[in-house]
Length: 405
Image 1 (cartoon, helix red, strand yellow):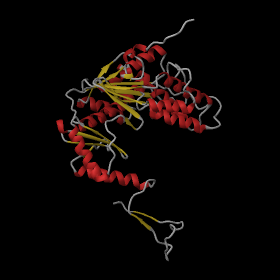
Image 2 (cartoon, rainbow, N blue to C red; image 1 turned 180 degrees about the vertical axis):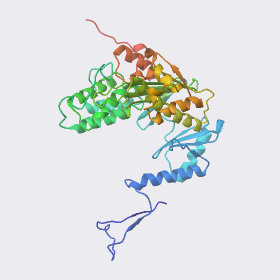
Image 3 (cartoon, rainbow, N blue to C red; image 1 turned 120 degrees about the vertical axis):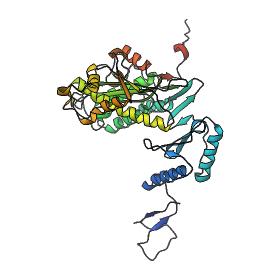
Image 4 (cartoon, helix red, strand yellow; image 1 turned 60 degrees about the horizontal axis):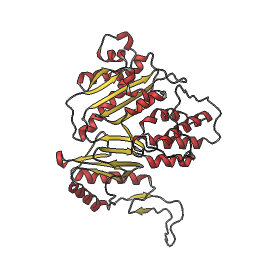
């Protein structure tokens, strides 16, 4: 039972009589809307799970695991929504019975729709998409009948704060960018475009809004597109890291892009502007490597919590030979003495055997699409490498029937 104390400054409820106006009300239950409610609920749920043998991950607090091998259970929590994963339905039922005895849960059955994400499981694997959410965005913006675009951003487009006239109502732009930002959960193909648009939410202009509308037109071309996780794949990390040196015309900071594959499945990606200005393209690539290595380390910890171990180091591909040389060679003093010590986490993890650095050609660099807008042929090739699937697209492109008079 949660007890919250709150002093009321308004009148008491009807029928309540008190001689002392300074009295406070003692709540016997937490109420929705109070700031303490979610925290108290999370603490109570965590304590109950740990008491029955669950282990809370130190690296992802919303993940709880228990057991090993065939008895292994994974439980993922988002506020009051819970996902339970296990191959044995009897073990899942026992966990549900425990939760129901403590919190009175509602069983929604097999995973099909979670936080706006549609999950479709077949014998080939698992598909995650946000088709309904994408259609809602298009409907609210009035783009359901728009002409589709082949790419989310025109090649060579550079946005800045001085582009065009300021919007009279910037809230529409901010709301649109916020909604599209959540769509990147299953749409890595729009990650770079949304990253660019999110930099101008403070003072958007008409040109920024047109660029956002281009993203909507691209979503219209395939609203059901999402990630596919194959059932049979090698459990080995394969990572691509890239950067676009001095890409921002205003700050001259570079863009970092990376994508992490577990076998053939894309499990993590990012497109983000670097925090500092790099003096050379090699330094920008090396800083991107540092961010990518930290993500690999975090992914390794999470997979260990899921009882997945690795015999081989994660393969990290980079298209900059100079950045690889900086990580492997201590002689490059003049080029590296100004780089922050945090960046040398790459060298440390390389010596520990966590990663293995390998060169890759620019044409085969999968992370290239996370750092810059690509031309249509290159963009299609980039999307084909991300493991994206559209369950709602007709097989073989479909066909149309026409009546000729």
